[in-house]
Image 1 (cartoon, rainbow, N blue to C red):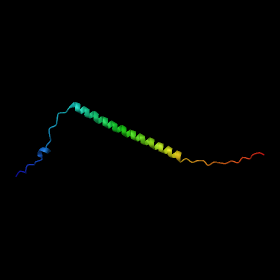
Image 2: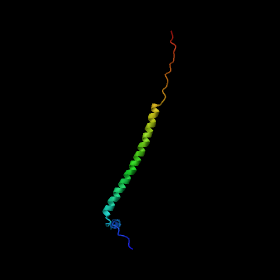
Image 3: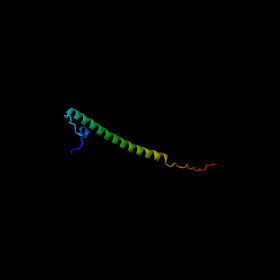
Image 4: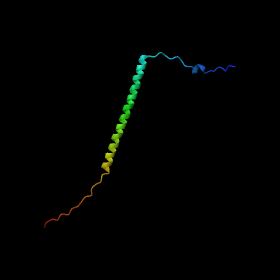
Length: 80
């Protein structure tokens, strides 16, 4: 006995593809490369900004938390 026909069979079969278009492939390669390079530069910039931020935060903390010297009073005898 044969299985009942599947109504979705035409949707599940592969469709024939279009022939390769060299111009489209080159355009896709350029767009992909540009996106990947931009991601690399964004990541590098974020890391550099983080390093600078940590350095500035440390410098600001050192400036704010530096000890202040107490004033020293010296008594000098005045000649009569």
